[in-house]
Image (spheres, rainbow, N blue to C red):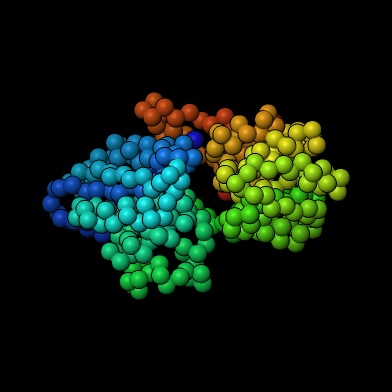
Length: 339
């Protein structure tokens, strides 16, 4: 998976730049400069978090010093029992704060963990840059709970990823305007994340003139049998299926169940958010009715960076990213490109 590694490296670049201009501990004299990294390194999100950690390591190896300071990272796993854990994350941040040479934190991956970590870091005026959190509540003034800003003055949390409320409408635009889909079915995983995505897709798709011919919420704790629903929406004329949710919501199993009901591959687009885009296990769960998410162009600098990263950490371009997808426009929504 390429994107987590490069987003994390971008976070590192922002942090070291800020440390340079802001004057970290012992400014003006050589010494250590530590960057904390908090990611779910074990459990289901480990395959995405490990490349992110490797991207950070790669950046530090390329930039080992900053204004005479020796840069190094201190990393911690915020997963407990196999899943990202807010309390574990908050404890990790508290540990980072105890390090006088630590100037900032990269992470976390997950919005619930961020909600627990931000107030801890905020009270200590510790900057955090997340490569992937996407809940609007974390940064929007109209949503931001006062509990995330106990200091009342410090803005300490930053992120690179767009917010969830943009993903559903972007997918609707692509489905209607580019894929020329007029009738779609919508499935969510019953979680707040997935339901918000599904609602955003539905609202935008119908505003454009499309019709949502069926909606289903599936229990993410079970594999679920969606064949009856899929048969019904196929009869109602659905030309595509949008899934709001992550891998744990069994979205790719739904894609597998579409086989034999809908035409396979690109003939029936299967659209979804970033939560299902980069997971090899999710792609494998399609049972041969695979889809290929379309990503924005890395650009020549990004591709050159990937070529340098690959020999050291063993990363390969994910098979889900086709040459055509790499030439796509930045910000293009994720969708079913090829079988």
